[in-house]
Image 1 (cartoon, rainbow, N blue to C red):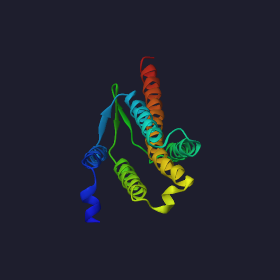
Image 2: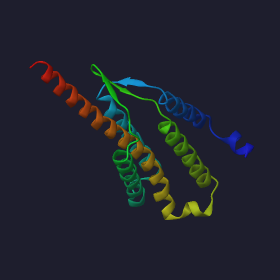
Image 3: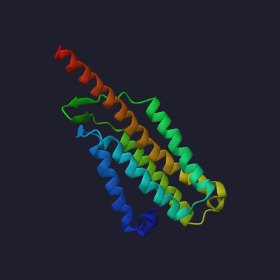
Length: 173
């Protein structure tokens, strides 16, 4: 195991540090604008699509698994939110901290690292066509979590905006 860690490229540790930083930062309350709630998931989708197709090409198992993973995770996170306690402060949306981003990004990083290591070490099961689908589905599940979370937060923020606009119009009467 120690040899695996020694032969791991330095960029992997850099990527892990970035993932860890953003995961830990999400544990604390954050102030952001409404458009930021959707821009981050869009950026993550684009980066993930580029990376998935760069390494595996535009094949049906890859894109199908990736898309299925996104749809499953987005639906689960959007329809079963973790009761985010968003609130408004003027034009800013206050999102509370939580461990979900740290947990999902950490679990996703380790799963992708393990799948990449298995593939690089030439494990027989990584040569199966279904491996590409499962590998890309893992990426899709991670991306889908962020898409569902962004959509859920955006929907709640728009509801808060409508309530505050309704309240301010009643105050003027």
